Length: 466
Ligand SMILES: *Cc1c(COP(=O)(O)O)cnc(C)c1O
Picture 1 (cartoon, rainbow, N blue to C red):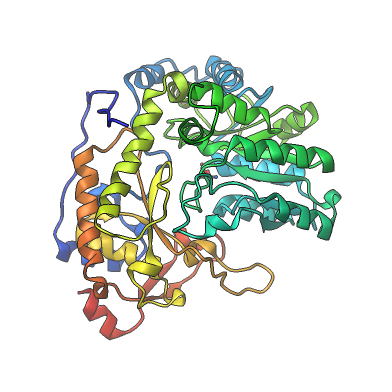
Picture 2 (cartoon, rainbow, N blue to C red):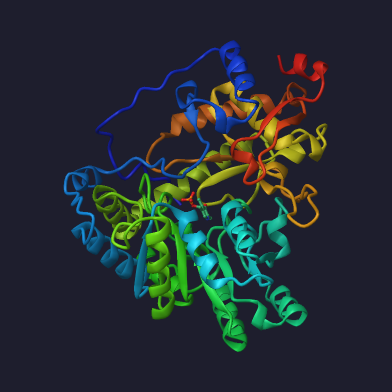
């Protein structure tokens, strides 16, 4: 396919600043070798996350001025509600301030202590809320998802045999729902197929298990379906998004990603009792059910963003193909990373880039720190640190995937920014001994990757990093 230029032109710019290597070495030490603890102004190109980092359109900025900041019944709530109903097709809508708040409320309402919650790979906040509600997460994604070299076109798919095994082991009555994620983040932004979702629907109907969609990246997933799944080439992104949702019973959503919002999230569902119960929870934890932690202007900008995400197919084509561009530069230089390229990020394979670092010395964490020092580009760890400890045994989980995520904010960076980031990574890839293993100096109990602090394992290692 011919690469098309960005389907927008630039109207406002935000200056960014390059720093020296010496300065960055000092800053990463001060940040405990954790890129989450760096200050944004010390970062040149910020590929930490695609969450809430999108550039808004002129129509979104205009919408901010139309915020109705009434405590109750803001017109922006009704507009957002209608937009979610129209784009995703669910009957009921409950706003929250972001995705994890929706996960909290859903987990609290649907999971009983002792239940099992299968999912196509875990997501950090999703699994934590399942565990806090007394549930046990069970990974039912296909094996290919755990292999960064497998070129399966739909590595996000659920393995129905793994679902059957779980039902046989614990009984369907102990499985309230499956958490089904589009463009599975922890697998490398890997899509699900409609064929898999239909098969799962039939399976779940047989056992009375609900399908709750993690709707955070359904638009990106729809693009992969349009490109790869037989019968979908001539369907619009808007049609495919709605079709995906139609096979599910409801969703949680972080609207800070596909939704092009800087903040926001929601729960949506078709079941009226669940809706009423969720509204009752939202007033306890988020705010009234007509704002759920968002201001009127946030809801206005978000509604406009959700509409833009599916209005034409041009936006999402640009979005996913830009990620592919970064991945292609790395492929050409032989830098190991997860293939096929995902929808929101390129995931470097730290196991193969820094094979001299044992998993217990946090190779992906160390690589992300080194990338910052060498290039000023901020990335993040998705490996053993993100995976955390097993709540029952207290032991570190050892995921197969040990990755550094280079996440692309939407509509923010140009091709030359991405080329610069790729060139920096390629240079480091050629001198892997610059990267040294780490050990914890502070380990938070939950979601430790956000706030953990590290230091190099040995004094020798520290000189190497210098
Ligand atoms: C970001 C994300 C969440 C959590 O949403 P927040 O808005 O960060 O709270 C849940 N699931 C997936 C797949 C995500 O990427």
